[in-house]
Length: 341
Image 1 (spheres, helix red, strand yellow):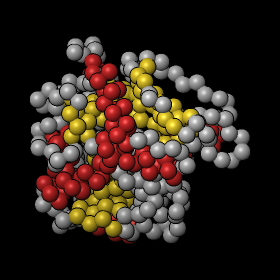
Image 2: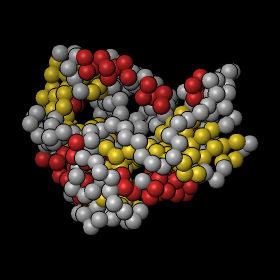
Image 3: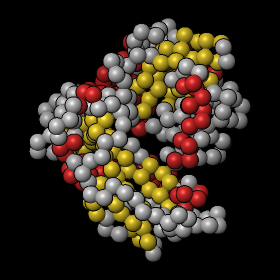
């Protein structure tokens, strides 16, 4: 299929409507068959559960054009599994995991002309999401739901390369103990908006959230997991029930162990330890790894030995290996890559 006439290298990371999206509705205890539609609008009651009590969960994944010209998606089974766990936590019906993958495939196939070519630096971002669509005035779950998947081509998350960023230790709490921090719910991201706007106004790129109970342990940022590298090249990631189980982080941990032969620890990380690490990165779908050069703790600045000019050497190897797997330059572990075409 002929690609759309888009300047792929200059589209940025934003929403560009594509031709088709997938919609399925839950009513009377069951999901309907689902359809592809050209209609990009959503019509719901003014009293819908999503509007009254933020009953919504979502996912994010990408389709890539590989080196040999195939269109693939990366580990969609884990996105399907995570959406199911998120839905259960918010008392929403689970959209079957096999149907989730099928819906994603259908959307990518229907928008093949929007999948950026290999080497452009751009990808097709895919957003599955679900929300309470029926009216709810008392505090309780909705009775009807809608599951949707849309796709939009996005440019590279970083213009001109992944330069290290500066983050601040936030005065706000991201998630309470035993709360919803471990699921991908819209409400978790809504509470981070004021904090990130404030951080930007102060000249920082992101926030580091500490655990709400003791404010002594590293958790994550508003939308990414942390990954640290020690001075003897050990990879260390925070462990907490309040942290979203990032698919990118889990993939990087596997890459570190099995591809690069590095020792990996997943454990509680006290903020007091951070000054002793050699490298720091933020893991997520959009950029894979965002290198962190500095952390500002209320005027006390930690500058990592990796510096503010480029990714640290271990972080760079992790980034290059995982993106190599996604783009087909490096053989993937079994089951990681689903070929669309």
